[in-house]
Length: 466
Image (cartoon, rainbow, N blue to C red; front, side):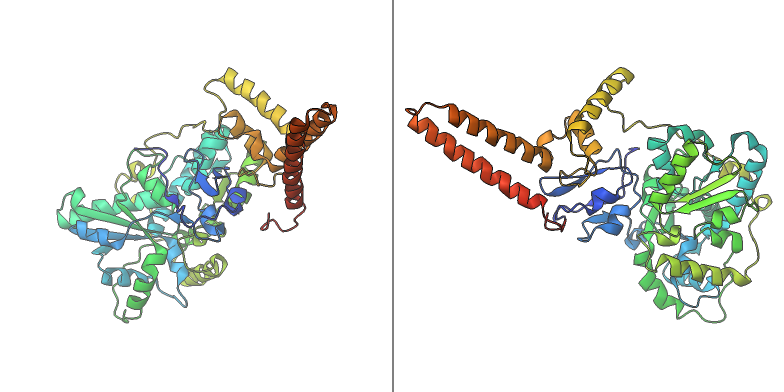
């Protein structure tokens, strides 16, 4: 599989070439060239931040449609815990689960039930690996990919357990084959996701060779159809719920850590906060922590770009829903070969996508070039060149993907110098060289006019006008 598959794409027809996305991308994967944004696939971690901030809706999430259900003899829906936080006054998850069956799914399996198994396995792992603390959660695919490309020293601290969605898919597929006698390829496992990073995980998983999830649907697509059917679910509904407080809590920030029964944890959400925590972890600033839960989206999974409810409102709804739930309903001893279902089967490797050269010596040499270029550039990080920072532009120049002239300030200074040189040359011309003198004067006026126009652009206070 392509390790650089991505579920975040760009619609160039909608792109206006603004710099909102390049300033917010956590891995500096976006550039603006020739008036259009470009996404560097090697740098992108599919966090969806560009989708969130693009005012022109030019960044899109790629996911599957419900029509794919027709390709299977038997289908199973895997609702994410964050799905429950999208509805008002929900007091029983069975309403949602029964409505999913009314939509056409033959069966449902709660991802929150698998989350309880992962929580139990995590508690056991923490108790037996105290020499490698703190352990970093691997539930958010974007965070794992961020560590893989930008924080290689932290890879050894990753929790080597499958995320709940993968565990749920494994259990759902096994159960469906036992119930129906169908072959695995005749059964479709559909995850209802709050974010595009889960799509990327399914196409190119980390920690396992192949995901058991067949298709990923968006909560925002399912929501209107599901809502209408929820209203038709009566009091005599089937009891399909198999999870409790611990599993449902995974839908919000801090929910995973709360199921570990320890106070020595840190929970951070929002990609900028995640990066700050990872930098502090590299600097070994957290000596007493046992567990670190990180979510790329604000508020946790309820803040994914494929949801419909405000993440903080959804978080309150989840807290209300779990109020009268049992602590947990799924346990490791209830599942045969549970350890094999939960544990990683492959390791996560460092991917040096940010290297400036093909080898160490070349990278060091180019790093020196970058430092020299940074001294010549203004250091304003304005984004007018199409790169998020002056350092990013310098790296692009060293990689052969840009030039110093892309910097409007550098170009302006060059024009000023050229104007002065032309003026000096005109003063040195002999009086008899009238044609050459006239050409130099015209050139000088032209260069001066361009220089003045660029100075006017620099003086604009509104970056939008700029």
